[in-house]
Image (cartoon, rainbow, N blue to C red):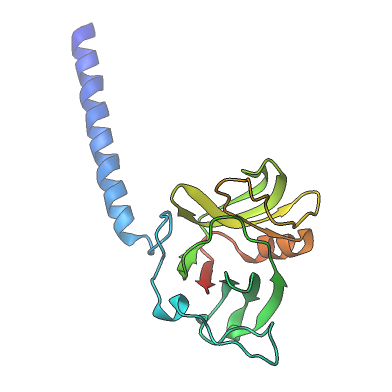
Length: 185
């Protein structure tokens, strides 16, 4: 009797694993590009080029930064724009990049953490991640001690883009899972 019930359990387990695999395959076909992936959501030629800037208003939203509700991050200008409906800038602020930059493209927020220790050993809060570059998680965060200084040159591969605590709170409230992030030069 023990043999037959263990055979039944093994058969049911195999069937369940096959069903889960099939459902996971089907679900992956319906996931928007970039969600749950380290690849860009949509490669955009406008995001790859240096977005035009308003030289009289350097904090103005670059014109070639996409449309709709999104986070825009300029790796060249170390600036972020939180853009709401109607392409209205809700907030813009300077950031301090890590040592690894994300390639210009369109992404989505894939994960968030309230408080953790950053890869540089500093306590951070309001972590909003949107991609992964060669095994390095890339995202926005604020140091709990309020520091926004650049990482030491001796630090290895760091993907944290540091914001002030106030800007980190604004990012946390704005950029929930699935929010678009457009990275421009």
